Length: 168
Image (tube, rainbow, N blue to C red; front, side, top):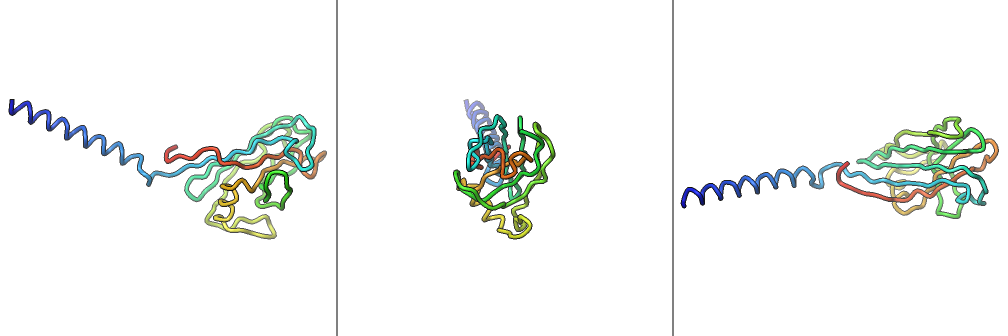
């Protein structure tokens, strides 16, 4: 009986130790990932446009880096520019961060990373990475894609936070 009690105690101690190891693997020191998405269409442009083009801009914050991918489908012609702009939904704003746009009517327009440890510049003015992150978290920036036909912007979408996690 005494031997059985020792075995049960040892098994219980091993189980507790294993649970502690698993818990520590997903603690708050793990990299945090937050996803933001902009659904792009002509109706979101100001003024709105009746175009069939659509797109998605996905932004993933990990640590102090935002990675992004902008894809489009059915633009009126090749993309000539794409940016992150300052502005709430329904308002136009200045460029916050320019992307290097690929000249495609469908497919990937832009991808890359933004280092939030560096000033965020549009070529003439800049803001801090923390300021850009605050704008992202409050839905006060948008992405749009410009074409030769619609030089002020053909499709647009507000950048909105959709997911946050401590694991990948």
